[in-house]
Length: 562
Image (cartoon, rainbow, N blue to C red; front, top):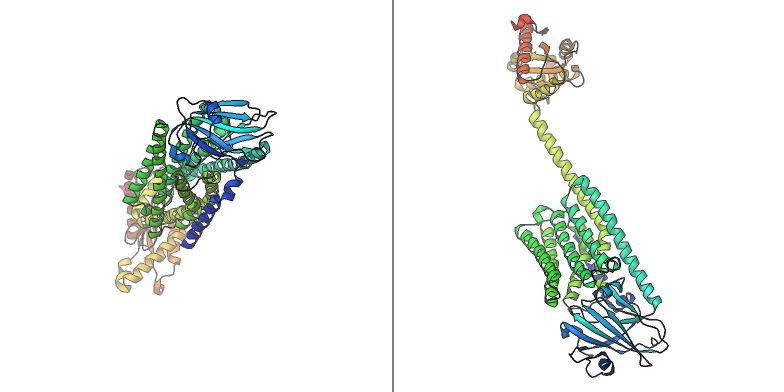
């Protein structure tokens, strides 16, 4: 097993993760100049005009996450150079909040207010789940921006990554993410069609689990991109965020089921299976709790939800280690396909737990990682199906060999009595049949004179002669020690004489002269009772041939039956 390929994939995924965490990578995913902000919790006697004039209330050093949930004033400390005039777009990350009011103050003292409720937030979403508000253009220069945020859960911040961008910069940034999400959506559609088609033909459970995972990721991309808010803004932005939680948990759950059925059963022992089920149940419960209970204790619920993905990452490592210990045939191909998704999922979990800084690219790393996985997964699944096909063909070959051993006489390789009767009744149900019995003449003398080994060789050569004499489609069997049977359609002519000639012409050990006596009978063969009657008549004809001097054939007649 090429384990080195697996570790190289891990290293490549780690390098990709480091690249996504670099400031340059984060900067390339943003548009415009950063706006520094300061925060002040709302008091009952606060007014917007008072907060626009004061600076002492605002805290510019404490991280936003330390303020907890509630209502806040957020003030831009200073606008970037060159943005005071001209058309601008105010952008910030989409966060959990009930609504906000944005105040734009101009050099002439005029303040323009924009009130945004939950539905308004959904309508202002740009690609990449970024709030985007056009800055009102007036004759005076823009001098100040103030946010009044209501009902902030402060799970990821209050106003994060605020930027002022030109419309052209916003368009370019949206085009980049349109390509990302559009490509990922097309890839998901292709993978669903491909794997559902394979599943309908092959019915492997891991294919259905993979389809479920792809569908969940497509739903996550649809909601997290902002496209869902464009099509259905009425439920509001918070409903879109709830869909994010559900879709990501569903994708993780389907990934677990995929791994469970992709690897051999021996990889998932009792404890590993229990841990897999437990982690899956935990993901479902925490996602449901957040969706149903937030914004109540939203930060705690989000923490519990994020811990589920930490557990998932640990469990993935355990599964891979067990697969290596059990020498799984699928470890390397699974590792190549899933190294980047698992590692980036771990890094995203660290970001959700606020252990490392977040970034736009890191937030969308799931799509990038799954794009890489999708490109390799087709090869992985094809490889898995190929090995399953080999296993199936081997099992079928073994089953066929076992069936042949059960139905075949081991000495002559003809049908045995049981299989001959089964096949004879199947043929007799369609049309009348002719049963021909052949018995070796003086075979006991052959065994007594030459020994059983040469006697067995005589039987093998007689069997070959019978195969040659029998027409195509005939049933040929050894039904006793030196007794053979041939079943053909009742209208077959001359078969007994052909059998006699074939045996006479067969070359025997020591050039012995071996002959057979033949008896035959034709009639209906639709039941075991018919078989007993037909066999009795043919056997009586065989006895008549023996009595008449052997090496000859007789046909059963009514006189024999009497």
